[in-house]
Length: 238
Image 1 (spheres, rainbow, N blue to C red):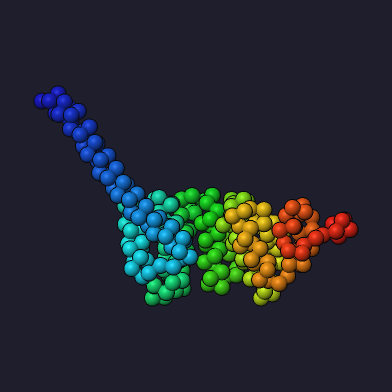
Image 2 (cartoon, rainbow, N blue to C red; image 1 turned 90 degrees about the vertical axis):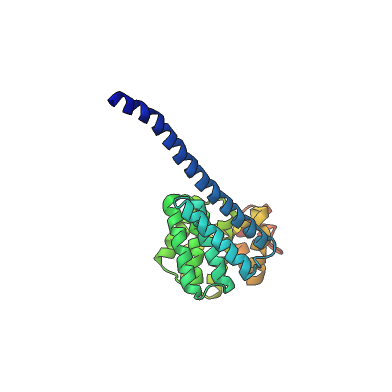
């Protein structure tokens, strides 16, 4: 009798395992489809200058929520959930902008716990702090992590460039804490073709191009020459 039971389970157990694996595969495959549905909507928004309808937003939020529920430990899905909520808050599609931004920040934090070396997620959290006007040690930590893990990441260049000029414009004391990184990211932003236009635009709008030239006096001429009228003499460099 025991032998028959063992033989039966030797046949049943693999079948149960295959059924379980098929269920998991179907579940994750469905989550992947939901994610790519969101990804396509996000790409449309980006191509159209971040313009989206409330219906598109609701569709994207519903799809990414399903993806996260089906695969709750996937940092990419969780990060995307934060991104969708952030955009919805800024577009006015959520009832309370600040509450939705804080919810988005929570998803970004979950994503960093699962994959702490993603610089863009750290940058996204710093951006949330900026939107909430929370210039504190937590924001400084997010900035330092973004800088640490994304030394050549275009999104991090743009974050520091935009934030640095905003702090300069309002004479904010936090600029002193990030000044060196700010200058470094301006230079990196100028060197990178994908961020050069945005960096030059910020320099032009700030009206302090000559000051930037002095800040970057130790940079090679090919970097400085991107800034209109920026010519640093040998005497100034010495």
